[in-house]
Image 1 (cartoon, rainbow, N blue to C red):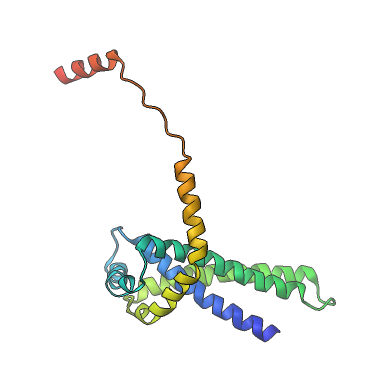
Image 2: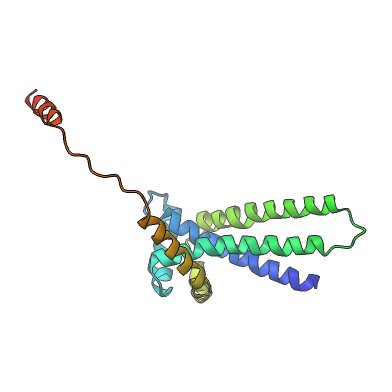
Length: 180
């Protein structure tokens, strides 16, 4: 059982690193960046994004959702191992180990590794993972459709402030300022 959980955690760590990198690429688009970072964006836009088969918005949302779901999956597996532990082990020590492991996962695989890939590579390595990314996007499609629906509903329910008519005094002020 522990071996199966270890394999699942390693798989989810890979998914977390990959989706965190792509999420970072989408977050950095449109910004003024140094040459190394810009090369990653250009490689992604030219070689990867057209092959994903979905819009940039859908892919970006999928990467955000997958990053959070893979982190949650890792936490769930570590939590399962915590409570499946032998009764003789100290529970407080096991909880501390799981918390430290989760912090390490977020720091290493959600932040540090994607940053290293972003700053130390040109981004061409991602071309090999296009089928994996496409599969992950389609696996996340049900969740992203639900999220998109709720975002649309939230946008529709935003209060729009009624336009206030202009007061004649504002027109007089504008004429006075224009004359000066």
